[in-house]
Amino acid sequence: MRHAIILLMAGLLILTACKKNDELNINLKYDQNLSLEYHEVIDAYSQLADYYAEARLVEMGKTDIGKPLHLFMISGDGDFDPESVKKKGRCIILINNGIHPGEPEGIDASIQFSWDLLENRNDLKKYLDNVMIGIIPMYNIGGALDRSQYYRTNQNGPIYNGRRRNARNLDLNRDFAKQETENARSFAKTFLFLNPDVFLDTHTTNGSDHQYTITLIATLYSKLDTAMGTFFKNKMLPELYERMEKNSEYEMIPYIQMSNYFGDIKDGIMAYNDDPFYSTGYTSLFNCYSFMTENLVYKYFPDRVRSVVDFLTQLTDFTYDNCSEIRQLKDEADKIIKEQNLFHLAWELDRSYSENILFKGYEYIRPEPSEGMRVRGYYDHDKPWTDTIPYYTKYDPVLTVKKPWAYVIPQAWSDVVDKLKYNGITVYRLGNNTDIEVETYYIENAERSERPNQGHYVNRNVKVRTVNQEMPFYKGDYIIITNQHANRYIVEMLEPQAPNSYFAWNYFDPILEAQDFYSFRTFESQLMELLDKDEELRAAMEKRKTEDESFANDQMAQLRFIYERSPMYEIEKYNRLYPVCRLINEPDNLDLEEDPI
Image (cartoon, rainbow, N blue to C red; front, side, top):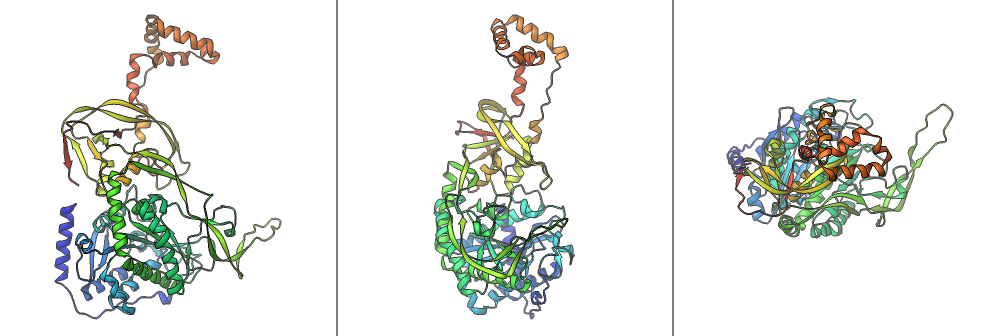
């Protein structure tokens, strides 16, 4: 991976020597209720990169449609090496746009913001003293190329919108953890390359109607490192809301997720639990302050774009003002995570804790039902209201695991290891065949979802049984040592009970299928012979028959009872055995070779 980054930086140096002095010909159309098409977006960034020495546009990998995923960077001194930028004490912000191309505000807003910044409108260029900006111009290119005036028809502009899903018909904002798409793998490469301090993903929501144009999803502060979470909750979030109120005509409010699904906004709203398959849930695994703007579909498109431009400005302004503290807290968290022992895998809303926030809404009208007619409610814009409502922000861990010294993954599951490598995780391989004492999981329960999600019938409510045993491993099997910056990603993806683990996404489902069968028709005589020879076993079965009438009348249950106590039952140790083993303590004389990424 380091070699690939060196090659990328060499390419950037070549681009530096190719600057042009042509006049800019960028035609943003959001005031005409139009969002730029894909080729217009890339052309706009190409012009900016050619015109300004502080800007670069590079290709970071492929997408499922075959077109490249671009990264546009703005750096005040023309240094586009993220490691070098960080050594200078600067922060890095990464902005992702067009994950759902029918939600295009961020696409146009990021071009406007970049142009304003590079042109030093309103003295914005000062931010580059402390901040480097990275922008993914358009993430879901396949969906963006499929434009229609009929996508998102309930949305108040633009006239033409892209398709929500990508070329594989996948929702890319459900693929960040498992990374089954080229888009997600290229994103991981981009994210690993920049290692940003702050991340923003731009979206549109069609939820409840209210007086705000822009809402904000912030990753859960309780999931962050303690010091980062405190800073996030007590300083960063309050100031961002305050800055939008003071410096923008578009006041901002938290994303509206009602605390009571069938209730009313006045009953309260709750913070969004952004699981790792979402962009913000994924990026926060790597100690990144992560946000998602959600503009309201009912508001006019030009206003939605301008609100995002304003938020980009305020987010950059806050990062500029607080860069040293942001960097210090992230650097400390990166060190802490390598030594951290306990990891939280699942979370639940704490309804005993809430904050009061001022909210500006509209009365929701529920008409009386009429016979034979379906009646729907609506928000009455002639009846605005302002009041304080409860805001539930605290989530408590409900599933915690202690990390092992390392995870051992048989090479038969190399596709899973490849996914770990995409995320910059160091992997080792055994240099010889060896037996190792490990902690193993047996899957006791796994309930399939009734409907497919991203083409998967996801495993939920997973229960495991733990057994310590010696297992054979072979030369080439993988060792993932948990002393890495990506420990949260490692643990959350490899622990089968985690809601977004590789097991949840069905990558290990073959282990749920028993294949070593026996036939009672031919096996019965062997079992009865065993019963005749083993007096202790015979006594145990007779005792069970006297205690359990149904057992006494069930011949198959009796044969199973004998089989489970026979030497032949050894083959069953692989039935429902989760193949990723936990090596609790570092063993002596383990022959390991680092596997290149």
